[in-house]
Length: 287
Length: 279
Image 1 (cartoon, chains in turn cyan, orange):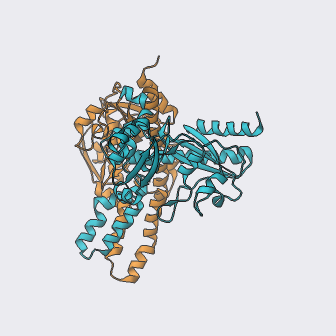
Image 2 (cartoon, rainbow over the protein chains, first blue to last red; image 1 turned 60 degrees about the vertical axis):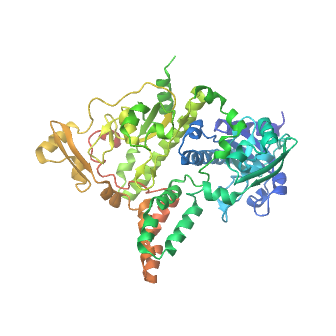
Image 3 (cartoon, chains in turn brown, red; image 1 turned 180 degrees about the horizontal axis):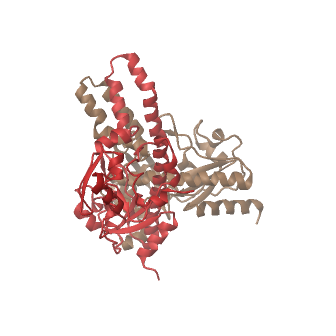
């Protein structure tokens, strides 16, 4: 086994031991080709050669079964942080073990809603899954929907190959589409999602993030800004007081304070995906 | 082979929890208001696993109460991490639906799930005069976190004898009509003891919040309201750029001082005192 292959094995093993369910490697150049300017790994870390993507933080089946809309969102927030911790540890491991620069991809958004690095794109390039109709998320055949985090490094590594056969649409979704021109995810949220399937593959896909945000990110930082603006513009002092001390504003502030429900608070389109459901087969058997 | 109850508790303790107990979800359901029951959160809930741990003993040696709150809060966060990993552990090892419910308040002051109630029902302690916190018979006051699961487990059940008041507190109350905790905060706490048992207990949460949670999310809301109502531009500038507002915003950003920053009623409690003292 070559030194490079040994290093890759060590990296993937380290990620696995720290909680990653799947790990893949992509070349920086392959991501740079598709990412817009300002969002390329080479712009975040000078001399970057490789991006290692860890996937994990699968939402508990229990969270999907909760009738309270914000529970899956809360659990999802917690899980995202967990995956980012794996990436953080992995970057540290690479610097110490291999003496190459490494950083974990920043979680922060640049501007209003643009992530600095598109971890989903990195996951696709690292062969961990393909885009799904549901919220344009990356779908893995075995694990369904996962949260992803990336480590950008100057270490040259051999890339994994992107998956050729798309995971989405699943065969039963193709059948459903042929019969009724919809899929489980499109059906559950026809306002946010639109797609066209032909010959078993996605031909067109549209995820309206703006509509989605106003529905599923009601306690996000943007929601906080909107309520604050409305309250400041409110001429009636009593109404202003009600807005600023009321439950809704309280929830947005608490969301920021405790770092939960900041992004997705509804994941209805993920819940109905047959690939996602199959990934929980063991739990379902005991449910 | 070890039974699953012991295996789960051992796993939690192996992850750095100090104690672990199991409560029946239906027992808790009976005592909770609608919308705050384990079965409202997870309809298939059968058991609630509660874990607890202590803040560092060094926390009690910090002279600045703001730092006390921050250090203690981080211990709490660690416990939450164990609880959500426990949900993963139960789902992957036993295949039962599990989740870690949000530990914080939903809306203004109502926690989604009363974690203290869960701890009580899991036999990890009983209500105390000190802010109605749960007092563990060995370790005293602990932080708690829970995992709700559809896995049927044998419940530990509540303790038979209350831990509070401790014998020394009973003697003190008989002599001077107070206890160490009530003495430390007579404004927030009051209570009466008769025949060695708590007869009445009052904890004024709203007063405690204005004193002990002065940089919490509700405190920031009050300050935003104050700034919004201020008509004098110079005064408004002072409010928004001043020290107090800055501390509240920083508290929010760095997740520090969000909850209790005063633990004075906890400090003098004789139960578990030995775990709060080091060399």
